[in-house]
View 1 (cartoon, rainbow, N blue to C red):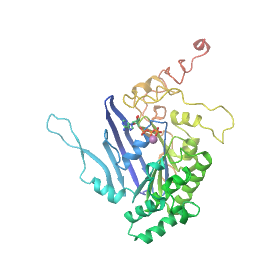
View 2 (cartoon, protein in one colour; view 1 turned 30 degrees about the horizontal axis):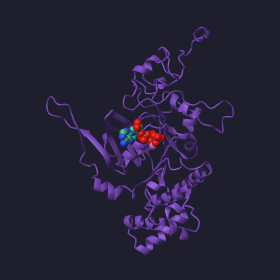
View 3 (cartoon, helix red, strand yellow; view 1 turned 45 degrees about the vertical axis):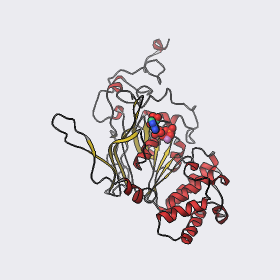
View 4 (tube, rainbow, N blue to C red; view 1 turned 90 degrees about the horizontal axis):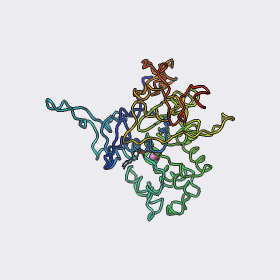
Length: 383
Ligand SMILES: Nc1ncnc2c1ncn2[C@@H]1O[C@H](COP(=O)(O)OP(=O)(O)OP(=O)(O)O)[C@@H](O)[C@H]1O
Ligand code: NI
């Protein structure tokens, strides 16, 4: 219970300042990753998953800016802002805290060595003009105190470790000679090469066919057990979450709206958006019922809806949901001490809010999910 998380993200906000306005891509998210844990970040396209992943690594480029929040990793401040007490009459400003790592420190101490990142497209990370082996060897040389020959041997060993057949021969080949799945294995080898304590994987299996995806997920589970590496696994696929994650953060429009271990998320779902995501995926444990795609489209992150951001698509939405912004809170009637590891199930929905904001008395909303009919009306309403 007293165990400190490896990675702690608090109220992280990242915005893009575009001609059309300010995109609130990540809008105050908080989550933790404990040592050796596989934590999912799941949600539809545009939810802010990739921006969240990149923000943790401080890899956000202009016009994007991390505008607020804190990210701590092993006691180091990767991101840290505090309010100044501004001049009298001036609003307080946010400034970087002194202990926030410099860009140089992020590069030499954190990225690659302590936290590695894997992207969906391996060709973004592999240079087509060099052999796979030479790139892996160079990466190892750069980040570990190994000579050229030692680094080469280690590179071959890593290729073997991630299940690439004939690693000696494959070492001499170029990225284009590898299949998509094999390239993704190379990236996993590269990520593991420096024995990081955390790997952030941004949809690394999305472009692969289902069989190859399954093989990669098996490999990741095996390596995770062997090295006790923690993972943040970004995906839009609840099937992937079910297969590999220990805990899950569900994102909607820049916010984390539910946070739970994987069993509770699937079997004691609290947020209607999570329910909708689950209803839209095929499930081996549910034989009946059609797949229900989530109705409506996700609104723009430039002008997020008032109140609960999901109210325009939520089948359970009531009038109060348009007014009251729900915070991510431990669920009412839940076990407030959390699961056996002390990790709490949280949801951002006033249906479960401990502070009564009047959900039960509030009028149901007509919206995209209810198809224009008010929830709860009898035949006269649907004439
Ligand atoms: N460089 C950028 N400039 C402007 N807006 C951006 C930029 N990058 C991301 N965004 C916006 O930030 C929001 C979150 O994007 P993000 O890529 O994190 O979504 P995602 O959840 O990873 O989606 P996907 O599943 O499609 O990868 C979106 O509204 C997106 O349009
Ligand atoms: Ni993404």
